[in-house]
Amino acid sequence: MTFVELLRAMLDRRLFDCRLTPDRALGTLAEAETFLRDRGLLTRTADCALPSLYEACHEAPYKPGSPGFATWPATRWPWFGEFGDRGYLIAAVHRGKNLLMTGEVAGLIDPICRAEITRMRAADPGWRRLLDHLADAGSASIEDLRTELRLKRQELSALRAPLERCGAILARSLQVTAGEGHQHASELIRWDQAHPIPSASLTDPRQALADLIAAAVRAAVVAPERELRRWFSWQWYWTDGLVDGHADQGLRLKERIRRCEVMAAGGSCSCQRAFLDRKRMSVGECPGPRGGRPTPSVSIDRHLARQCARLPGGLD
Figure 1 (cartoon, one colour):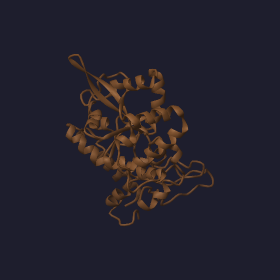
Figure 2 (cartoon, one colour):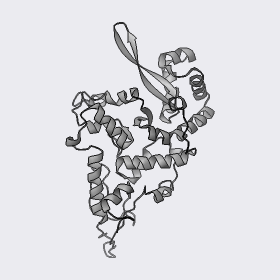
Figure 3 (cartoon, one colour):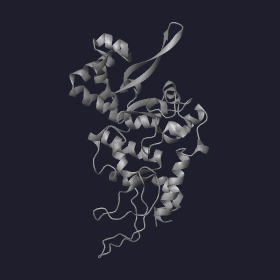
Figure 4 (cartoon, one colour):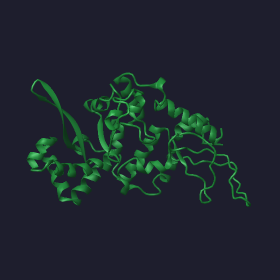
């Protein structure tokens, strides 16, 4: 199987596994939970190659033609939050956006979030005050924290936002009684309180990030490699060799170009190869040399690639 054929097969597999076609639309919360457990992690809305819960619903938006929350599925938008009520963790570690995860993926993230608690506690007295208060008092509602720490709403928001983005704390929904009805509020909790058992096999946050990216690639099936660095908040743990360091586990599958000739006269490239269009997720021909080098590579779940190719050692 050539690389072009393999990539086409993997893109077809992605359409199926990530439920990107209407015939694979999620119809019930139980189906959505199976989808989550199968993929390991889900974003809320589609913004990259990672699988998205709302995208898999294929439901008309709440208010067509309007931006923001109005683009969410009309009836199934509560599902994302309901998984939090079922014990799944939701953390804003997708560059400030919420990521829904299974316990297995939470175990991969755990060393990073614990390291972030230590780092951020030492970096800023305001962060330390909030983290220490939550350590002593346990989870607390936003209103209680404002009262106990004597903070204005904007001051608390400024403190919590970077802590949430880095996974040191999580925000969880609360339903509180108000007269004859219910109102929704939020509470904050430290990561090590929401996930109290430390990861037994991982302690190094850089290694944990590499393992997390490997799991995320498996969830996406195939993804532009340039995207990987932008999936999670922790840029300071990223190294240029992080992806290559997982080559033995099959994270990175480089394109193998059968024939590439640079014509001396016109300097054009006559190679036929696959490339991943970032927006359309499609397969095409090489658009030509870029600075004398091939276009960027893609990351593929090699276990699935071997299944598609039916080869024990990769591409022929």
